[in-house]
Image 1: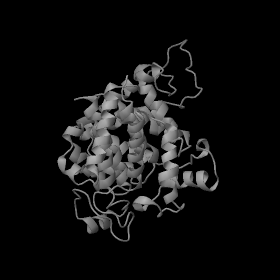
Image 2: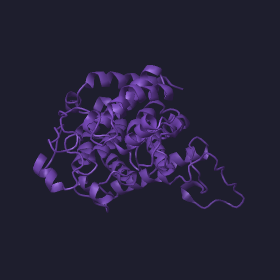
Image 3: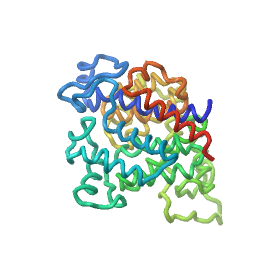
Image 4: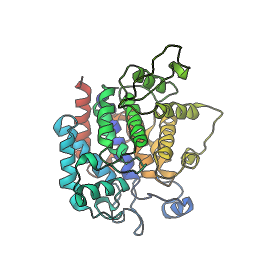
Length: 358
């Protein structure tokens, strides 16, 4: 399978996941979600009139997907990440539609990160270097996954562009580190690696080689440093590589016959339904490892777990989309996605750029 197919699969998998979550988004009472949507949600649905994203139709993107598509379009048209171009698009295309309230703006809901960036940029007239807020969510990872696909062959470039893009809306260094780690994992999957118990070793090898900006003092397989080993430089580096270890632990749990999460959607109960990254990433890694070669059950179990299922579904969709490629995403998910043809063209163009990029 080519990098082209995997990169396009990661992006379209994420957009499909985002649109799947529009209807049953943020149900923390699973009995209520089952009453509204039945025992098992199998595809795109419309949100109820009193819920988030009310007014959208089944298969449409909400704001997270709109911003992801905005970054996708910028990267494709500029043949790479041009921060000034992306910020210009936010200033011209998104921010004029916002009013600083959660239920304002396109898609029916504006996240805390985007609201805080809007306030700093529009009301306080701050430069883009001072717009990041302190939300602990996956908001930046949801769009920056585009950069993972584009620069999959250059891990250092993934880390550089993702961390810079994340800081536009999120200033907490722990969140920037986890966002960067997720995107580095996704980049390896686009290159053809598997989400298995050994993936973190490959990520740590990149840390040791100086390609990923994480601080690590252990030897391989987390062994103690040898006497005389120098302390790696900390300047400009994330404090520890622990965010790179999570995916392999989750993969080990998914593959261990003595560990059972049944049905798989209950991963949301095990790791938590809320929006914070430390709830979302373990669940997405688990599902993407358990269903590494089957897109449909991965995203549907992410969706049917309730809570912040839209982000869980989006992050899982990207991870599994990268493993199966665009060619193996079931056609019905593409057919039901609004503007799938135009988005597919952009994702394919991004995949071509990733394929030939040094």
